[in-house]
Amino acid sequence: MSDFACRACRCTNGQIVLDLGLQPASDYFPGLDHGGPDPEYPLQMWLCSTCGLAQLADDPTVPEEPRGAEPAALVEQAMDAVGRVAAAGLLPDGAGVAEYGSPHGGSWLGLLAERGLKPVDEPDLADVVVDCFGMMHAADQAAAMAERARRVADGGLLLLQYHALDTIVRYGQWNALRHGHYAYYSTSALISMLGMAGFTARTAWHFDLYGGTVLLAAQPDTDNRAGPDNAVRSLLAEDDRIGVRSAAFVARLGLDAQAKASALHSYLRAEQAAGRTVLGYSAASRAVALLRRAGIDRSLLPAVVDASPAKQGRRMPGTDIPVVGPDELSARRPDTVVLFLADLRAEVRTAFPEIEANGGRWVDAESLG
View (tube, rainbow, N blue to C red):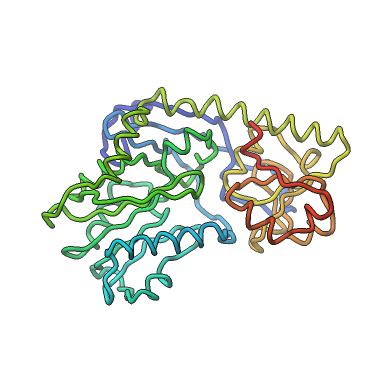
């Protein structure tokens, strides 16, 4: 990787901190009639020694993911986030707003419109520019940050929401690494990127989504306003305390990858030996690497249920496990449902009370390792 340059600062000093070997593209869901084998590609995380950005090393894949169903937890968090920013007095009535969305869906524009903000057309400047999990999908991180910064009007606000790198490492979320997701931000690395674009972080909010996400509010340096507040300083201090920009810290993900994959395989074997019926729930991108690394096929996991019609009738990449609709939960009456996206737990327990009413149980895949 000596010829690899950081996607943000262009420096070549860095190293591979997580290597998941060859993996199928997690946004490629083949039809059930496509027997495979599926193409596989190297999947590695590279950590820049200069700016501290953790990033996808290479990505020869072409994005083509079927649109997933937006989790209720993500909708609720968006409402909470907009409410907090408004309470801070940062969403003036009548302000223009531009949004850089995520290809996975979801939008804040409706919530912001309810508070009097008005969408502006590309490439017009906006008083508020929002990016909720969108920028991580840009291969050129420097260009993506510059583009968002350019859209912010004088005196305006840039809001960036991200899945924090310290959360990913603390909770062993190694399978957050996937093709098409080019950056994994610590607060300190993202603030460095903002500085390159001429912006200063002013305040921040923390949310429990995905185990720990952050919404950072930044403004142009030319606004001559106060510097980072206590919320930002606290996040930076925690980054320094745990050494989030060090290769040793991030490399812990490799140990978690093997432990959690082995734990899932052992659990499904034990369920099978006990004669219990098991289904998976959520054909999420992070389930792909887990199933592939754990060597799981339909003999251990007969199907994965997903609410997205676009994924139903296909199969999980890299394995023969079919993706089926929620009606299969009633038809098959599983003893155990392995949940591949923990944030869905409250939503699915409410939506499918018959699972527990019939003596079944929900098990978080991430809790097994």
